[in-house]
Length: 238
Image 1 (cartoon, one colour):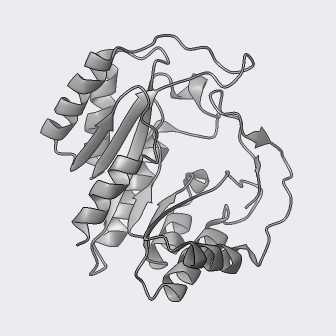
Image 2: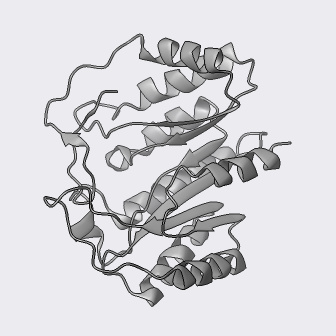
């Protein structure tokens, strides 16, 4: 879906453009072929936001999942990390019908900081609705499925605000959570407000498990696509 994003979150170094290049219609098949050759058993698909497209790129995303599943005889676990499609839940539904094993959408930060950290089109409750709807769609299928989200710390949030964000994620059925330290990509991006102590990350991990998350990865170097997390998730499908 290209390397140019139609949004401009203050923490992200991805290039932005109001008119990104057209989608490559052969990308879904090429991606599936490459993954098949690499012999992977777990893949994470993600993309830039494409608000310039009617469906936000959901159809392209879904087609890629379908191709991967077809070429692997459904043996590869697929985690898709998507945007919010501007709140259009038809995009979420389209992707869910393609059969991902894990649907990830990052909340990124606490509710108070969302307007100043994320692009103005990204809304806190809109993100929660994406996760809720993905879980709702999965209940209509007879396959094992999980949802996942991620939070950055060190952006100026308070401890109680993080706990509330975790509770909000659990309220929409989110299964997995990763939390890591925000690191400033360049001086043009928002500054780091705090380097959160490892002990705080450990405490949040414990609280997350108590709240009912099936898995929590919480530490300064943890990122949304975390290898240890993928290993744990794979074990749940055995």
